Image 1 (cartoon, rainbow over the protein chains, first blue to last red):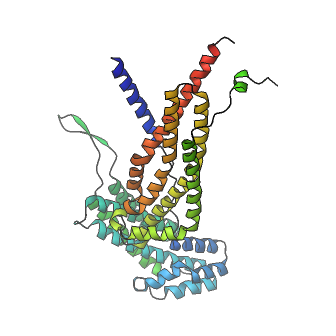
Image 2 (spheres, rainbow over the protein chains, first blue to last red):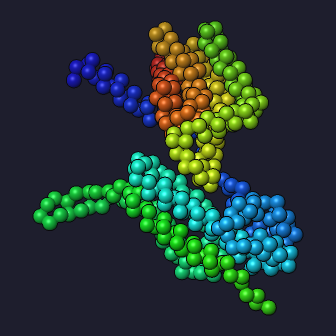
Image 3 (cartoon, each protein chain N blue to C red):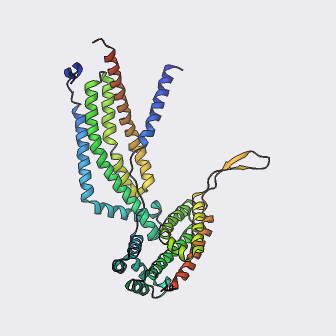
Length: 226
Length: 187
């Protein structure tokens, strides 16, 4: 190698070596935060668990969950607000939890329906549909995570169905892991399934359908044990 | 206690060129102004960024549903605020780094060419690098978090960060060479 070539190669190597650390700059970190509804739901849940019914009642009266009930009067069982308030006044924790779970179940169902509409919009670019589907799934899981335990206690089949449908939708939204395919007589080749918005539709509809059932189940008041 | 070494005793620290000191002090001044402005106008900056993002739903992947969009907006606003904080932090730090490293280079690097190269690279690289954070923050509402980061990377962080890193390694190499040469010299 001529000296000028060696020098150029050395400069190129140094430049390459510098690019990696220079690209590794601090950009901070971000973790999803609770919104008003999920924060209020958690506060209510913890107050109920701790037996602080006066605190729970105050948090409910002034909180975002009650505002959400007022917004969704058409899609929720009539008298839900009164039922939750009465339960909190009487100290009926199970009944209060039923009402609160019902609100979130209806909210998630509506999110899944809207996700189905946007992911199924054939006129929109494929990447946009996939991205929208992923964002909706994040929001769905953020809320469902809060009621999974209560739903599992009362309707384990529905809870399992929702989790499976969520996994399916998430898998179709992310695409699959690379697999080795061997055609008969042909050479083996590696293929990775791409994210498919059309395939996301069915699990999203399944989530909405199961949650409609959950809303119906939770619309029936729990029988008092005593 | 050991006696002070002769070479330390005989060499006085030399001040880097005034232009270098001016750049470093101006950078620290920018950091202070940036930090103060960030606190003073936080609500205004947040409101402007939010409105700018809402006016560009396609850029940010907003879907028109509160429960989805507020997370996207929250991430972008947090990143924007983080960019401003990192500008404040890096500008303060790099100002000091420029002063110290150029002083070391001016005092201890014997070769004129190498010394000038190190001082220029440290000053330009170190002074411009923090502004990448300002650029990133400013671009987030218009381009989205990831594309804005990519622009800041290729326009500022990689070229100027590389210059500062290269200069620091050159300085390390020059000091190492000086140390080895001095050890070989008979006392």
